[in-house]
Image (cartoon, rainbow, N blue to C red):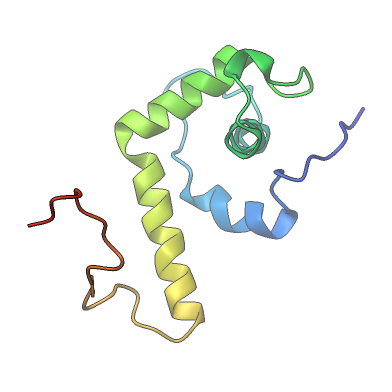
Amino acid sequence: MERRAYPSDLTDEEWEIIEPLLPAGKWGGRHREVDLREVLNAIFYVLKTGCQWAMLPHEFPPKSTVYEYYSQWRKSGDWQRIHAALHQQIRVQVHKEPTPSAVSIDSQSVKTTEKGG
């Protein structure tokens, strides 16, 4: 039985882009039983709604499984790696260099303390 879709769920097109960027299962380990797309959908649900991990709807994989993947990917740097890869893809799509060559910061963009200085 399929679950109802949430607005935070990945589309098929988004999944096709993200799936190859996800870390592979451990070599020689047990076969992965959890659907990583559903794990990501659950993580995005928490991020979008701001709900607690314990309040994750039952249609998703168990909260402990989802949080373990989130935590592993955060600690290993996989989230940053995936973000960087997606950022580069978007820049190329809009006909820019994959990585920016300069950054501009002005006093209106970056707030300081009230004293300034």
